[in-house]
Length: 208
Image (cartoon, rainbow, N blue to C red; front, side, top):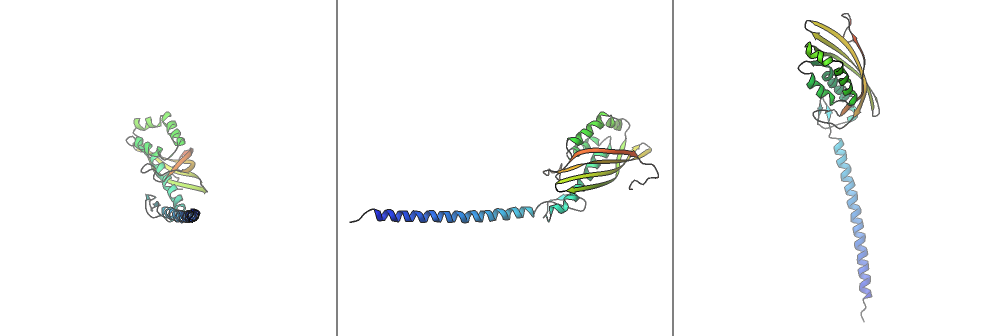
């Protein structure tokens, strides 16, 4: 006489093997997925941005981002100070717009203070030309914290008269998302401060 118990046992055994197979296949799929994601991540790290000899950011294969961070920081400071302090009546608004992308509110506050003091009005009124002749930056890197001090030599042309000044600025650099073309180096100047300004005499070398 046939009973249904034999069929039930077979069905339960089959279910057990199906469940076991699903678990094994799922585990294999998860392992392969993790390996693929890890490989994609590594490939992503090996293909980023490098800096050429002029400090320009180029999207090429990347060897070591840390190795180029100081070079990018130097290029960022060079770009900022040339835009912020290289001024004439026809270009200062464009330069200011570009420079303000490279710093936070501390840069904007210095700009607003100069504006309130009438500096830009005098620039327009007397057709002054302020040129950046020399920039020298020192960067101190401690982990993610970067501080800088920059020495700028400025020449202010008033017709036939030229005066030379030394300006020292300082602040911090914060890593942010790159923003082409406004902030290609992915750095932001914070805590920006003009430490000192003095007129250089004729006997002083601007690059000392």
